[in-house]
Length: 374
Image 1 (spheres, rainbow, N blue to C red):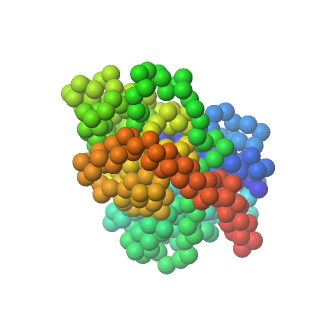
Image 2: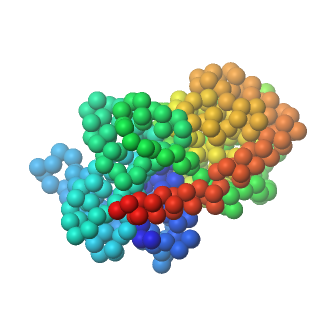
Image 3: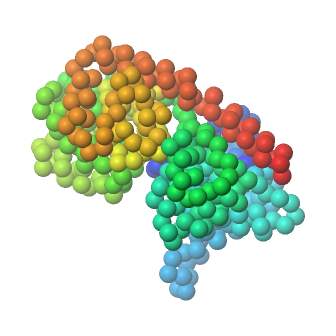
């Protein structure tokens, strides 16, 4: 199949999942055309089956804001015509599904089906905003197929958006051959030269991730045992986290690495993944850590209970309960047998339920069904 994929190319769950999906589909023999304003993260370089089509937006004094939705629709149309695309798969409802609908309407010579995957804040934040709700609902209902990344998000979409159509739950996934337990002793010594325990956090550093809480939890852990904190990612709350680390005298113990593509080599250095988010529609960072055999201590919110069973692969704690999160983290770090058992259970859960080899065929079957109905 020839598939056009559109996502936000930024450092966040929806962009990562869309990129990994394209890479996995290309490895299975499909031709993938990414259509976005920048090359999505984790792609590396385009190849024979991976293509990138940049959306260029006109800057004109009449426009207070560049009309990206229209520029994207035009580029979707152009790529569909020039590359004979079979379908479009858009990630994040607004504005991508609207652009896909426009592109399909423009292409009068044939029907161009499009699939919309809902990822989280496109529903829980943007979609429920009354100024966007009507068009969010419209674009979802006009999609030829809709998927959600968790049962939690499926329920929110039906309840809050008022959509009256089938939405299939296809969870996020991880490449279990890439994200796998490994002994990165040399890299780990860069962070913990004296054998300290290593805590890791991976996110886009937006307020919903509660990044300052990560530093506060680490501070409490650090008072009890020698430890280091590895912060992977970047975003608006990074400066706050850096300031907190300085104020608490933790500058030498906290490593801010910024955006990284090969995060699996860093996650493997960790003993615990901290994810104290206010909301997670799935929790991809937790899953990637689990695949590397690293137990998460995360918030009991959204779709995370579908990924992590409390007390088995890690611990789930109400968001904002920093005292309990610190205690659960210390429990893992000070009990080698518990850490080993949780790490093994985490890897097994990722392997049995969320490996790409199990999830990608679900998307292929969905595409085939959509094409058969067109």
